[in-house]
Image (cartoon, rainbow, N blue to C red; front, side, top):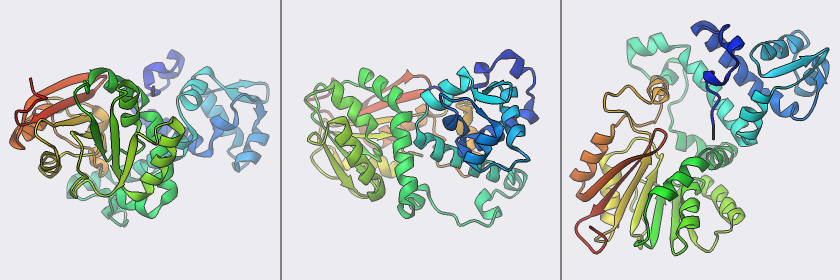
Length: 342
């Protein structure tokens, strides 16, 4: 999925933006997404009063909000009617599902709130949720409690990871392997892409129960109910047996316990696969991973070198790393010397 970066905006819009207005403008766009303005205007031309009535926007801000979005190049205005610009159609409709609109915009609202106490975070070292008087609980705990959130999040990731899933299928050779366990596999997007490429392959997806309910439906929609098995569980518990590949894709911070779990459950010659956006060796990229650390993110802060060292310490050999798609890395290792090794 392609993201709306600033370089995609018209030059006339960029000239209006500085650091302060970028912050405020991004918050305004998030509000527009939460209100689903772009989806309401998809293929339509409507006056401000009509849009405001449909979406419940106060009359004081109806035209003001829409005019601001025109100024940002996201809407067009003709007399008293508004419609989506080509930019909005591409990045808020074509590139995003309704699940992205609902889930990601909600996450952004929460992130803006957490950044409001950034100075206190920097001085105290505390999680912003503590400073805001909120309960500290993991993302998985939240999804266990909120099945709607789990549904939207899982569906969102299925769309979001399509491009890197296809790239992974082109760069990971599984010709000699038979069964892959996708730990924290969520929507199954990575496993489905691999099964489309390797017709002999079967997969298992391990995740929490609310996610697995959604994953089961996705697998059926994609036509793979007979080749993918669903396992409800925790990635820190022992894994189901019978898999000669164990894969971790975008599961958050990697650690020795996860590596050890994989090693114990793999047969001799089995392979561990890690797919994620790791920090650069100088630790200055990716920028969004760094920024999210200030608001209690679960993103890992390991470099590729540190991940490789972790695999070596965990007993894996023939380790290979490949920056195979944008800033996404593929790292693999083999358990001891077996028939699958070089």
